[in-house]
Image (cartoon, rainbow, N blue to C red):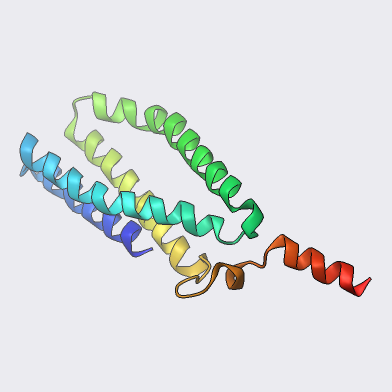
Amino acid sequence: SSTYLLSGVLLFGTAWLFDQGSLNATTLTACWCVVLFFASAGASSAYLTVSEIFPMETRAMSIAFFYALGTAVGGISGPLVFADLTESGVVGDTVLAFQIGAGLMCAAGLVAAFLAVKAERRSLEDVARPLSEVAGKASATT
């Protein structure tokens, strides 16, 4: 959650600096590099954390499914939402695109902060029991 929140706040800051005309091509690229450094860490941890709630036998498929879903949603909606805003040449439109992205990242960070499974320093079996363990207990009781 902290990496998503930090990347959102940094992108809000980048949007503000861009709106003020304080950035040139080099400094804007540097801002994006810093934002994407934290956003990439957030995205990577989100894919892995979501998969931890599934039984061990299905975790690899879960990672692949959520990665594909996230890539599809971002790859389809991103160009549809942001292409017109960023190609208009109007600074305010580009700032709005930055702010939408920053707001989405902050929202994701808040969702993770309040709803994510707390898996730190816990074994994978403690986060979600393996299917073989659940099936073994069920057959032992019958």
